Image (tube, rainbow, N blue to C red):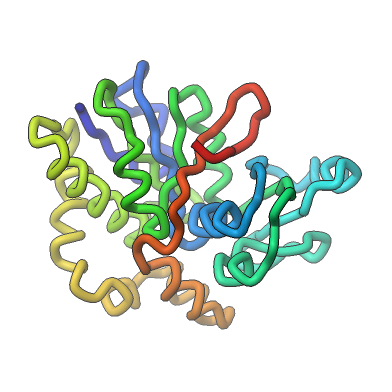
Length: 238
């Protein structure tokens, strides 16, 4: 297994592993955490959208609308991308149309991957178990509007460390992957305190989403592995 870390969707086209790879798209705060939560409470599918324009069409089809911009729920949507909100819902039998500032952009950037997973601390162990060992892996962080983020990089370090333990012959193809492991080793004892310096953590705290931050930095709250289905253009459970 070769592992490459891409710190932002803006860098994805410059990756070294250009074909034949699987990808994990991650936006810890909060899109991929919310997607895991939605599946944990019974969602059938989540359609990632990089624009708000299709939402009325999906409403007409009976989808639950979930949308966020700049940390805030879009007024026309039923919910935003708060994982703790999803965990209070019953989405059994529901399909969700989902659009966020960063996370869905990253997911859609990598739809040519086979397979394309959604990852977060919430499903860290289940995800690590599901990643195929017989192909290269790209971890794609969402960051914030093109910039890398501390929390996504930390998740990448945690995932890479687990994969190295499982597959001792795994090789890291870029410095970003190596740096993410070092960052994880520094922060792993108290992720919340370490991430308190992160710009998006501060942004979400100003919006009173501290409960989301704490939840999203907690590992293995969801035993789900969302994977992209190119035929339905939606995320479904593996």
